[in-house]
Image 1 (spheres, one colour):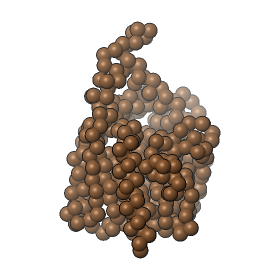
Image 2 (cartoon, helix red, strand yellow; image 1 turned 60 degrees about the vertical axis):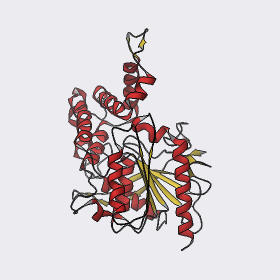
Image 3 (cartoon, helix red, strand yellow; image 1 turned 120 degrees about the vertical axis):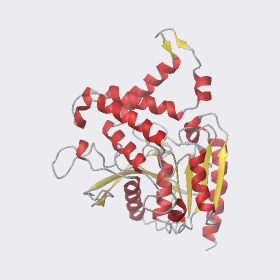
Image 4 (cartoon, one colour; image 1 turned 180 degrees about the vertical axis):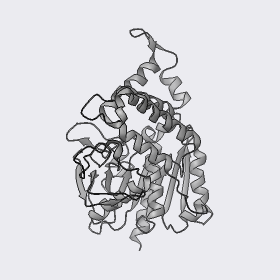
Length: 363
């Protein structure tokens, strides 16, 4: 399946901070075919460092999508049955408007003049995209990590536009520890002398700071067991360093080649600001209007987004006798499990979507 990234431009988007972005571009890809009554559409939301290329082989880069093992013919999100959409988030650097975009008001790159964004802003832009595609109601919204935050926001903000929701390895709000890890990454970037207060475009990139930020992130994505099995205390004789050091340096340098440092700052801050129950009495109150069917998935070895955070969402839904299925999958891969532990995950998603589809067709 060879796919190409498409783009849509919207006249404006009003943000939670009170600023209006105008215009706004959004990059997206689609897989499968939209049926006649437009009832088989599934929106996939990517995690922090992802993009619109979720599946298939990209026509330009020839690379596979970040969730290719879950999206495609016969897979968890079966493109023989469903029309799957994935867009790059607001604030990103892969085709959607972000700090690296041109500010039409000045003709210069936004950089750090880009307004503060939220998970809610990301979802509001996605809703514009879905509406422009002529889809009134999504069969499902799904995603892991930051993608799962967007799933929860969709279910809370647009309860009548989502038949089902699949939040995976995620949380209704960041803990102090999760905020702390993000802050370390941000400080690493801003401490790089090449960051230049965010005005590095056209010059030397703050590569060292961004690489360190990514290295910290990778440590949190893996579990102690997976790191022990993958690296142990083995050393690279040719380099005189431990294998884990070599791995982290490699992943850090790779990240610099594909991600914008300012996008890192803005998106991680949006994650930290996210609180599904903000301004409400409880999480239950936020979700009580929802008629959405939920499938919540967490992983035993995920210490970055531990299962208790998913269970908080499940408990809030069950207190109102809402339709929610929950499973904690056994895995040694830590937070990365939602990307690599796909066999059991696929079967669970398939069964859930089949049940949702039958319910939609009976109406």
